[in-house]
Amino acid sequence: MESELNSPMPRSRAPRRPRPASPAARRLLHLAAALLLAAPLLVAPLPASLPAAAHEAWYLEQLGIQEIWEETRGEGTRVAVIDSGVDDSHPGLPELAGARSFGDPGTDGTEPIGAQNVLFHGTAVASVIAGNGQDGNPTGVAPEAELLSASVWLGGGGPDDVPGARDQVADAVRWAADEGADVINLSLGWSEPSWPESWDEAFQYAMDKDVLIIACVGNRRQGAEQAWSPSTMPGVLGVGGLDREGRLAPDASAPGTAVDLMGPGVQIPVAWHEGGTGLAEGSSFAAPIVAGVAALMRAGDPEASAQDIAARLLQTAQPVPGHDGELPDAAVGHGRVDPPAAFASRATGSAETLGDLEAWVAMHRQAEPLRTEPIETPDEAGTDAVVQRLEPGRAEAAQRHAPLPVAGIAVTSGLLLAAVFTLVIALAARLKPQRAPKS
Image 1 (tube, helix red, strand yellow):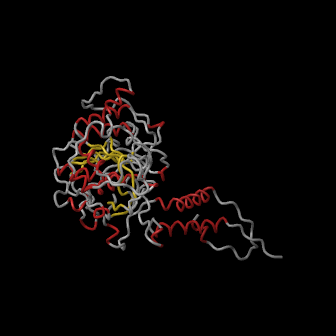
Image 2: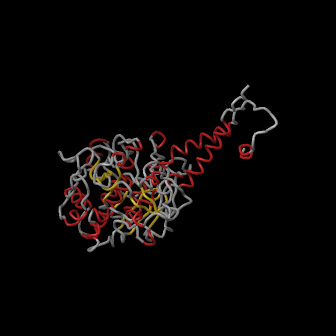
Image 3: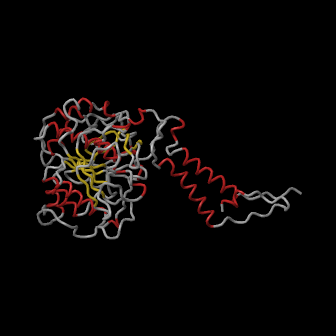
């Protein structure tokens, strides 16, 4: 087909009526157009020519996190990242303290799994928490915290011999608690605010082991009209996204009573799973900022419980412009995270700080008391067939150059756009009707 497109029109014959393009050519044209429309949502490594500031975590200074580093950088704490998997070969990340795959029997949690547009996600989230800052990579909020990686299959098309994604999450939560996690980060979710019963037991199991569970609340850009589960669960701290000026970033957050706290959610420097760095946005990247702050707090006060840490985060939160009314606010919760104030606080929490999951289950499930002993295998395959599976890589972590001025508005690499434009022009020329000769 390429040779036909590039060959000149015969000169010895009068112009002929254009024949319809082949189905393959039309499919290719449609694909090219789709790529152009989706270009702002694709993610590619930052070019090496960008200034060093593009790789720096701007919020570390703005939030006062560097002040806390004078006392601790998170040593002695463990944060579990339940996501698409963490690439343990990336030079910007510490050696993993533990890893396990729950979505692909052929992997072990140290390599990304899932749909193609989700592969970057776990590595990017992990770097926000504990990136080492070496070789031009971004520094995480708690750079000396230990990382656990639990990979689950996101984005559809998973292996047939594994349970559904939500049951994978349940198993991963239990595993993380058994591996000594102090904090669990869940930068994923489902559009339904409800959750499967398998989560009741798994999340309560982790909470009984004094684990603080943090989850993103979702993104309007992905169609979230209300907060996602698992952020909607009692006992889970739900985090939404703010812009660089500390205002609500609607595309990087979602409203609802599940919103507890806000953190930066735009232009977040991250490690890229194939090497290099990028910029990401979405509540998926606000949540690990708060998770990193929680790790610093647990390192600074090892005797504090998960409920104490949650209470300190909420009670010291700062107002978000435009949301100065009664708190918690349905859009911004208690407000913007204030790491130094939360770190210095000695407030105590209770089961009511984030809601009592066990009491909720007893009231709403009308079930037997929660079984919190470990289980080896999930009880059932899950209900993902009737639940919209979210794909955090599609829109949420995109626009890696935006809002860089002018040329930076093209968020995928110039080579990709050039290739797509070339393809469109060539195919358009192939499909363009030929004018009849003038009489």
